Image (cartoon, rainbow, N blue to C red):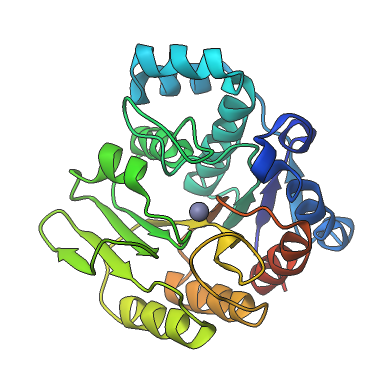
Length: 275
Ligand SMILES: [Zn+2]
């Protein structure tokens, strides 16, 4: 499999405080795959395209506010990596990509943001994919916090399937017209999570490229509302791999703070795709 990892040292050096300490341990766990030539390392850069996609995705007020926060640069660099990975996947240069980030994206809507998210990396990538002829995109968000920013930006687009596995006050809800599916599994154990995943992946879905918003705050030793163990992650990855049926798969890092969890679960996921 043609696989790529997108990583920049700024993600660990200048990323959002809650998120940044896990970045380098997670990346270091991939060293053996990079050394063996199983996965290619890419360094994202902020270019004109990333600037243009940002301006097309968020309000000028939003961007000005992020600038003021001090997280503009690392957030745009993070999103640029996701856009650049999506481009290579769409063009057939890669079949699988894993993107590290210094700040997350799924709580960033058109004109608002919260929860360590500033710019919606995935929404920017979807805009880019459309210019490359990829219209039908499936997003599976397994960060245990609800992807409200992604829903704000992409929820009205029926060519984007948006599936959220999450913990919280909302109830399980399906909107088959807009193809938004919210699956409430607060406190999910491995068994509950993998069963809920099976119930989604067992259905017929029409898509050309799959994006997984991956937060390891789902781990019982991290801060989110699921209770997964190390065992769940390679099983999850294998199910995603089987489901994708050789369509391109883009993993985008989301929540998670615990360096040891990142060191354990990120390489375990990547190994499934590169072995
Ligand atoms: Zn989260």
